Every structure is written in C-alpha cells, then in structure tokens.
Length: 126
Image (cartoon, rainbow, N blue to C red; front, side, top):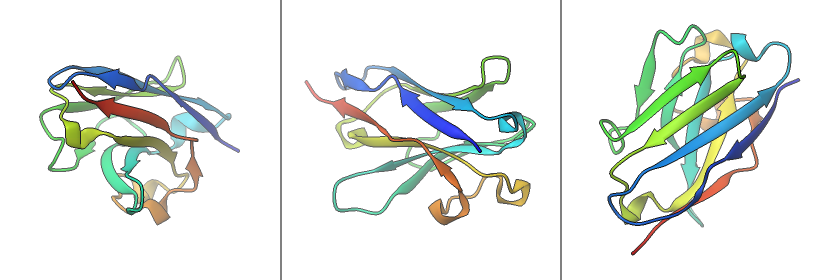
C-alpha cells in the first residue's frame, strides 16, 4: 500500500516560485512511476508532470514545460515539483499520484494511477 501526502502549496505572486513535495510511505514506492496532476473546481483533473521509476525520464504538459521540474529523491521517499514563473492560471489544487504498473509510466490519464494524495492548493495572485 502506498500513501501520498502533498505539501508546499500556498499563495505566491505572478512570476514567483513554489516547490511542492509529495511524501510517500510504502515499501515499494521506489518502484512506482509518479506524477503530478491538477484540478480546478468543476473541471477534470489534468496532467502536469510525471517521472519514471528509474528517474531516467520525465514528462510535462505543454502548458508547464520549461517552467516546472519534477524530481524524485529516493532516499527521502519524496517526489517534488519545482514551479517557476507561476501564472494566475496555475491557481488550482495539485495532486500527487502513483501507479504500480510500470507500463503506465508517463501516462497523462488520471485513471491509470492507483494512489492519490489529498491535494495542496496553489494560488497565484498579486
């Protein structure tokens, strides 16, 4: 069983930066492809970024590529999302996700992930 807990959300001005962290518990975390999604009220959950289990490959949504960076610290059992040049449209709840199925590595579909955190709110405003 994998449990995920996000942290690091908050209020930031446009152009600012935030670092989200996802702390995972579970003995097989290091073998799980991981991802970040986000969801605005009344909208479907959308893909943000993903990282393979070996950390050798990363994937990004077009809207965040070049601004966001996903990374994994296996020693600390965390997956991080560094967000730079934040825009007001980045204001949503961000979720960490994991899947035990390696063939879903990099998947942009929320249905392919079995484990989810509770979410952390990011607000970009002046």
